[in-house]
Amino acid sequence: MRISLRRVAEEISSSGAAAASKKRSLWPSVLRWIPSSTDHIIAAEKRLLSLVKTPYKQEQVNIGSGPPGSKIRWFRSESNEARLINTVTFDSKEESPTLVMVHGYGASQGFFFRNFDALAKHFKVIAIDQLGWGGSSRPDFTCKSTQETEDWFIDSFEEWRKAKNLSNFILLGHSFGGYVAAKYALKHPEHIQHLILVGPAGFTSETENKSEWLTRLRATWKGAILYHLWESNFTPQKIIRGLGPWGPDLVSKYTSSRFGNPSNGDVLTKDESRLLTDYVYHTLAAKASGELCMKYIFSFGAFARMPLLHCAPEWKVPTTFIYGSQDWMNYQGAQEARKNMKVPCEIIRVPQAGHFVFIDNPSAFHSAVYYACHKFFSLDQNSQNSSSLSKGLQSV
Image (cartoon, rainbow, N blue to C red):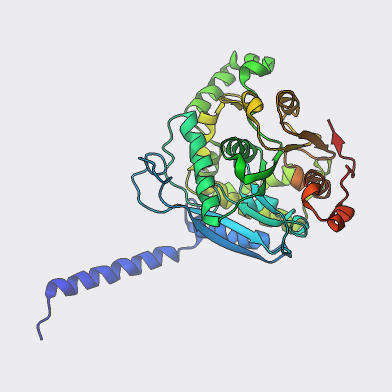
């Protein structure tokens, strides 16, 4: 029997490469400069969601390599690789209204961990990581304009909706996720029953804000440096990656100061803080993708380049705005927009809460959501949740 020396060499080379790959995968995270990966994100997500009592299903929803009919894949990407949207769906009663939850900038769906149990009692809750965030695919970010960047998020969400065969659902978005949800509802209103925008970003432009502090800041050398960093698309995540193995410590300090202060509301327990810190670190340290949207969506100072305020006359979906009473997002932008909306619109402020109102004061946040959606509940559910404002909520 003839043995090909070339074939033997190839097999030895192949097995050697496989062994090397396996060996690399076994290296402890602490020995890597950036001790994170997509597998780390999903594992951290699972640990965080172990705090949730409601059973759930986690899946990676395939949205293809680009929008059907598009001449380009996910925006100038050369890869044919399918994109996946990390999705969690919680068990619910039959006939419950569907609530889809979209996270904000620098976050991912696990940030709603304090809300899933309460909301799943009355909704079919589905939460996603947007394309380029969390445990979803992180394609190279190749967008070159505001419109392309918006389409990156809106079209990928629409492909996800098609893959899940969803329609007639309630859409909730927080912060930047609120901006995306609003823009999606403007483009595809036929699928949305009700829109809930939680501390949404992007309502006004720099011109409309006439911000004196920003004008003063720009006149300083610090402001000039910050402006340069903004325009060069320098993100906070780059600092986390640059710190390598010291990154987790910085994230821990952030979560402790932001969510461990009683003045901000309902303080995290030690387990919640530990698991959230772990989860946040891995989502921030992974490959840069969706985070690079910032300079295209917002100008320096986080003012929208294509403000939602300008779209108010085109609003087609009934909307409820929810803000924390200490939210740094200004609810007055929503008040201005409401003047030109031709659909029902309500603005609710939640006490003892900042921008992460759903973490700071979860019970009051849940009451605000129930109030916003009371028309979708049965009479029994309405009697449980009350169709009137409670828990110190304020309608403005």
